[in-house]
Length: 202
Image (cartoon, rainbow, N blue to C red; front, top):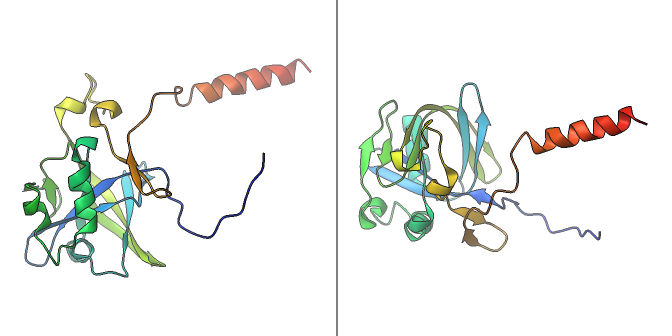
């Protein structure tokens, strides 16, 4: 196996594409597309997003002012609208209105839910820090709103039905989720048992 050192850059491939929304100072819904997103805590449930602070971002300004945001998960059939929300500025256009998206006030925080997205997390800001070019914002999830069409009979989200957009930073393209390859926390346990068994017989 031959390995090569690469030039320094942010490696965020692959990652789920999300849309974050917030109210601006005039109470208008703003939204932008992000690839810098992660789950950052189980208890309490928290997510962390990062938004480029070197550019004028209406959504970022709104989040910092209201201390709230909604994290939405677009599906592959919304890829054009999702990409548009990332390349257009809220200072230049009424982005959500232009693509025909509507919003509703979240139940638990002062932030707009984008009605057309199948999954939304209502978040209260609990921590912010600027690292390099981006402002990192951690939000505690206060409510999860999911369309019934993506849930199983136990109210678990079926990833294939959500059909999220996967962003490839290396080649600047969007992909879909692939096939299942194994059961999490089971295939490793099987290997662990096998390895322990081999060691016991040595």
